[in-house]
Image (cartoon, rainbow, N blue to C red):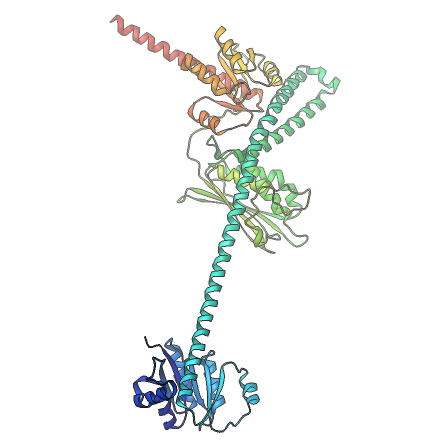
Length: 584
């Protein structure tokens, strides 16, 4: 197959242009002349050879125009034969300069009978020599054809090399993108592994911490009750100071409990209960807790409408998220100037969510760190100022509520965290909490079976439930044995115990009858395994979280007794109605 390359001839002599066409263009070849040349050179007829598409121009200006048109067509010239002595504005060297401006890779042959410039002068003016050759007139046809063939091949190889370089650059760019993606995925995997490890640690740690917190809190309540019973004699022993110490200690317990609850967010894929939170109340609470520190350093801008609908999430956890974001904003503020920290909330009814924003005019976050700020244990704060858990806990809390948290930041201008939370539309939670009403001490004494593997918890519950008849068991087997000897109104059972879980006791009572299983109230120290989550989702029984208050315990017991009374009354009514039907 004949291969064609484009050749440009620029010469003011028409005969020279015709000779180039005769030698290089197949359509105008003199076959006899070429065969004669071939026989003289090779001793045979002309072999298959390269054929060229030849363009000719009588002067430099027209030659440059032809070159420009060829580039526009996407088929540039490979080789140019340029006469040195031409009339007009462009001599040979000026024409070559203009051609290289249009086609930088063009291979050029200077055609001249008398060289007006030295080779040194030519190279000094044109700045290159590896694309430049000299052909003396009169030229030999075979020499012209060989030059055209060799230089066009050189030009083609150069084009292939440049294309290969472009392909390699594109491949390298693609590889860099793939490596960036892989590194990002590896970072995400490491983060997931951290979250998984932290989740398993939080589950077991929460259980171990909440158990002692439970009996410490209940013992403190019993101590407070005993002190208040002293009445007028309280001042004689400095009782008011002792009560203040008890209140401060209880506040410390609540802080520990809150931290454990937040850490537990890493051990749950979602919340077991649907809880609603008021955004305006959460903002007010967060500003109340951190407002004093904030106002010393910045102006506070609050744009939170009071009529916002409730959102999904725990009220206290949402408040803690806001406190964390506000304190981070405080730490990002520069010294001096007039810095601002703002909180804004907007309801989007068409999308069914509320957007809560916390922004500052601080130092901002560098772009390369934005993807890492939610990683556990990652922090840019000085040692002692941050643990690296705050933002990761915030994200887990928001994600568990069905929402999302994102960040935008510009170095030197500030940072904005945006939280999207779905509007709350579901019913009340099953988890028991204090309702704020006084305990009815005049109710009948309930028979309560407490099942827990922690001896201190058993003793504390006996003291706390002093108005009830309390029996205790330290394992499931012991509890089943006690339940078989007498009837209990309520069974308070820990969910996770070495000698068997609360679900096993529930199933044993369920085999006796659904009314027995309905008497169980579960207690948990926070060890929510997937199996425990599935079990609590299947049952309708209430559970309380350690550490719990005496008020919560009394209320859930009263509620349980009321439900049991309603069920028994309904059963008696059905029995009476059935008996009446039989006598008719």
